[in-house]
Amino acid sequence: MSDLAPDRVRPRLRGSFGESYLYVVETSSTQDVLRDSEHPHGAVAVAEHQTAGRGRSGRRWEDEPATALLFSVVLEPPSGSPLPQLSLVAGVAVAVALEREGAVPTLVKWPNDVLVERAKVAGILLEAAGGRVVCGIGVNVDQDEDELPHETRAPATSLRLAAGRRFDRGVLLAAVLDELERTYAAWLGHGLEALADELERRNALDGAIVSVDGRRGVAGAIAADGRLTVELDGGETVLVESGEVEIQATD
Ligand code: BTN
Image (cartoon, rainbow, N blue to C red; front, top):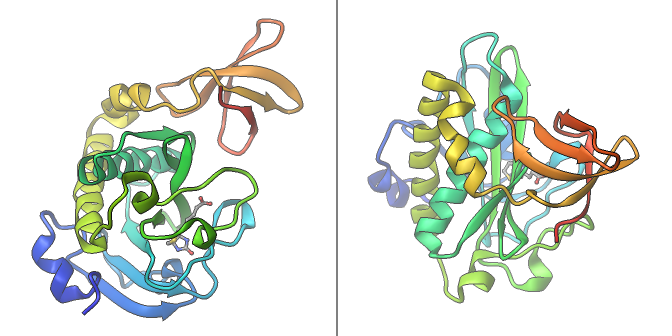
């Protein structure tokens, strides 16, 4: 039986996320499984393999069957909520859970990646429609080097490559869902401020050289509203929305 089968995962769940649990061997994308509004807040869809997995900015997210943790969660925030912040809310949850279960230090790379040893181990994709958000998370768990998602933008790794041992994906999934329920509740109650310490401690881009609209600068803190602080060459400091910054070097 797969480590992601409902009978293996349900006993490990600690909160309400995942009470509605849809497990499929193959689908186009777990994002598509949850598209209909019939799926409640906290519903989770998991797949062993996606035939048309999606990354950010229209990129594909490819996988070798049964080697990754590929799942989506329905979130129904109050209307008017700053939805882009949810990628940081999810990023902190994934980073904390993987660090605890994997015993490997993790960082959040603003706005939507989780890194281990400076390589991407997980990515987050938010798709919003009608005030409802489907939060997709892909974690590289058991891949060899040649099985990792091909992204020219960033080096990638898997938990097994980084930690030197195998992982039960059901254990990882339950840990991420538990953390996501915690960070989401904290964000609902107090905004991103509630996660400020964790974001500061795990900010992979602090000190990175980036370009913003063709202008070079050095990234700094993640601001209280989730935007990235960049000090441009010449001294001007700007706050950048997701998607407007290009990373040139992280050291
Ligand atoms: C990125 O880093 O660009 C985001 C990757 C998100 C991948 C996950 S895998 C589960 C869910 N289903 C998808 O099609 N995409 C997300």
